[in-house]
Amino acid sequence: MQAENLSSAAVPSRPRYRNTAHAFVDIFRTEGLRGLYRGVGPTAARASVGAATELATYDDLKGRLVRMGIVKDGFPAHLAGSLAAGFVSTLANSPFDVVKSRVMNQPVGPDGHGLVYRGMLDCFAKGIRSEGAFAFWKGFWPNYARVGPRVTIIFLVIERLREWFD
Image (cartoon, rainbow, N blue to C red):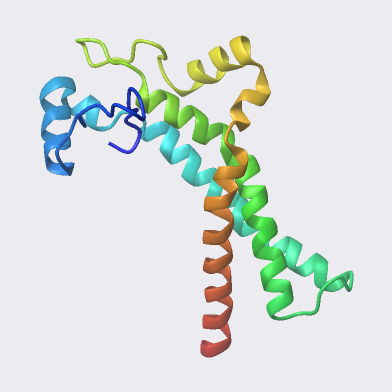
């Protein structure tokens, strides 16, 4: 539903689904169980890469910035570390985000299989061949505008909770 394209801003097309329940039922009827789970692999990869880079980058950079005397321990270090973690996470995550979107939004044949990509690796390979490696960072800044604040809020809240419960 989120990825639906309107044919024209001046003449919007009718949405494919009325609500989430209608989308669920329609996808199940037309594409089967496989259709409901299309994109699970790329989504799981994206989530794993995101969590791993956010956690590792935050702790490492926060500590380095304090040791180098660039920021003081406390809120300045937490803020700098979390902004950097969001940036590195977006950098590492963008290829998986692009692949996830492409795999999930491709047209599907009557057998429920995608008509463009066989899966995540096929999407990566075709993307590199046709557009080059940098194509996987399309939308980087809008993505960082979404991820950066989320990661910052999460780590600032975690640090406050650590202070309260330690």
